[in-house]
Image (cartoon, rainbow, N blue to C red; front, side, top):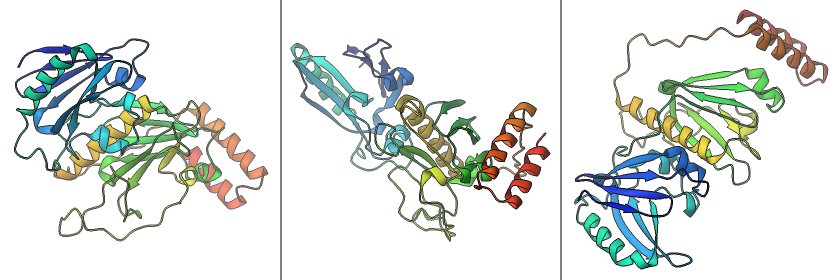
Length: 312
């Protein structure tokens, strides 16, 4: 098609095999869309196209992605508000006829399998490296591993006992994201072999020994509460906002899926980075406070202190 359709907060550019969606960076544009900047959506990733009346004299053109085609929507698991939907283009009602023309043109480009779930991600995930600040720590992702560095003001004693965490994506089977705009929001990694028999939408289950996606490996119990789980960071007011934590979750999910389908690299090892001495001193100080408060036993205090000193 090669045409451009400009709407509120976004512009769609129609190419022969895809739609390039560019998001505005104005003050009224939702921050999630600003952070995404632009996304190329192949026609093969779409299941349908709709045009509906909007609010206050507008119409809404929406491309509906196939289930499993977009890691961002898979990670969101239906929790995004309409205003943050990256597949909506809001137009003045006076342009409804033009919007209907483009909707029909786009429908004509959909493939025969558009009604079926996608067997792989067809829309690119946000790119690493990326990081965000949660209530109880900082989360970082370099494309190969996820790191959680606990905050001494917010992390639970269970997380302090476990210490800072590093998770290679090859050791994971999925990720759960609970929006910070709701109650008890969190980002939780799902290591292989944990109790994920009924994963949230967007999570992935560990493959069975025969390679089928529906089989489950023997499970290892994990804490029911995210604030006690070393494989999770929790959100709070002003911590882990959607525009930072959701792209992070989508990038991790895409990397997990890609690593699962790729042959394992021989001799892959994860090296622990050396710590800043000032950071170690601060953590030992906080550990001592937990010990004096009776939240850490003598044995746990000695073992954890020795572990921290060994990282110098």
